[in-house]
Length: 520
Image (cartoon, helix red, strand yellow):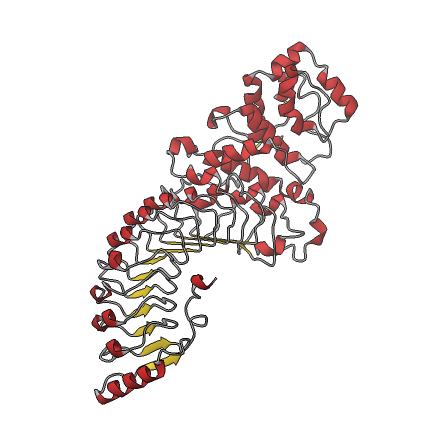
């Protein structure tokens, strides 16, 4: 029900309407809109709302920056509404919660006290198969979760694809998980205060979600202690948030006089209020996986994640920039797969601790020069990069042990490969323009070579004297290649010279490695 007025002078009533909308009928609204000029003046007074803020939240108004009128109304709406869907004004509360740890602790405590109310307004209360379960996925009914889930005692924070969820309640910001898995998440946004999870979260896996971007609370992490309100919480809780009476707590007397607001409830001290604990200076999150997030448009969420060591991004077709990654100085493992709009990899040049890099099927990348600065790389996957024409930019990667350049149709030679003396595994399957394996002869540490569907290569002679080569993958997809003759000659030579026998497998590129995108 919406209020039946249009007078702009009553704009302050629009703010408090969520407090009382469930308790008033049309006649009551008519009386309310006819309030006196003095009452309207009182409602527009910041001092009035600071008093009400303290009564509702049990905190002094000075503890939180922001519009106390909207935060107070939002808090009351959240704690006392009967309908399952939140009012729009409640976003003001969660935005403030994400900026103030003191307010976060207080709202969490109030949610614990009101847990029964938060649960009972969920329309699926009687459909829980395991109401005592400590696994998040067991609480999903009809793709929804109750508001009380944020203060539920959970051990597992995993949501898999067989349990699709259309959104997380804002109370999810009260979780203290070390690992969180969200699969099949179908909302376009995460909770506003989702960034509060960064206090404890070490591993985050989001798969198949429809999110467009991460909330600003991720970016705000790391602000000064003062702005986050890290001072300890003192004082008492207001029973206006503790009452669970059937009678409306905020009736017409609330908007009639400031004096009545001081009698809304008495104060009650709670012994279970958690002690103030400052969050770490930087998020402890070390592993982040984003896969099949088809609507995700940027990676600004990773800027404050300076402790990140593992980052995997796959099949995010709308991502176009890697600029936010430049701040991840501790990153050691980075995998980017099938992100067709990414063309500039300059930001990767600053990732000096990187040991594994994958840029598989990133078709828009044309220049690989920034990779020359990644001297610690031990593993590099450029499979399916149709813009890769030569290996010259990789010649300085002397620590490289594994290299995958399969299905790179523009790669015409293996020149400069002889400088990568540490290579133990090389994959060139599906590179149809490579005419010779001659540079491979210098790779004395090579143990595994995958050369399936390299149709121009007819001789394996450069491999004859490689002392450690024990696996060779080839295929006979080209009728005139004479591959069997080359293989027989290689086996005979290694037997005569007492070299390690090579296990040779005849496999097509579609079976081993990556299919050639040039065929599609």
